[in-house]
Image (tube, rainbow, N blue to C red; front, side):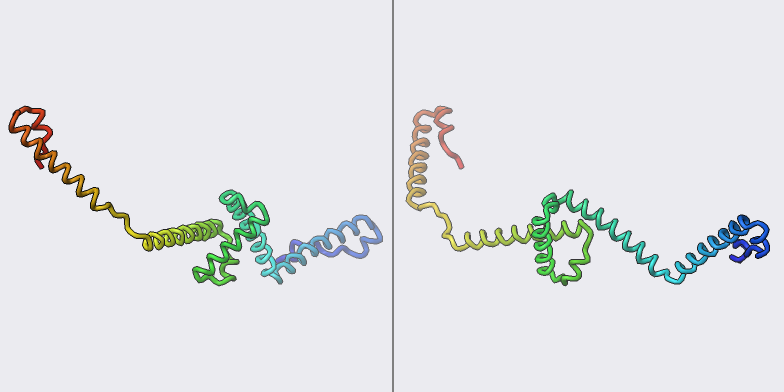
Length: 181
């Protein structure tokens, strides 16, 4: 089937009568054979094409995810801060039970952001627990009973005086001073 598309080998007598045409036909046939040979060679190693395509695809995805990560966390643009960022991500991943290989395989910036914010949440929770534990050790704030006693007594005396005054005068203003509760 392919042979029908490949030019036939030129007649050797043509080389003696018209060498230019012979050379042209021979070159044309050789080019066609080279093209067929390249297709055959590609067909022999289909995995190479898939691997090349996959590597190219992964490289593009890594570049895209890296840009998204840098826009979300500008500190990752600096190599030193980027190293610190990923060390923290690895540490939090290990706390949650991830293996180092699993963490290395993560390229999605959203998962890295989740790990970063999980780390912040854990730090916040730790600080909150420390503050709570400190408050448990402190004595409770109480109001001294002396002040309360005198305050109630003063109010009671004032209440009794207001009722007496209301009985004497019967005025509306004196009635307002009485606490009927």
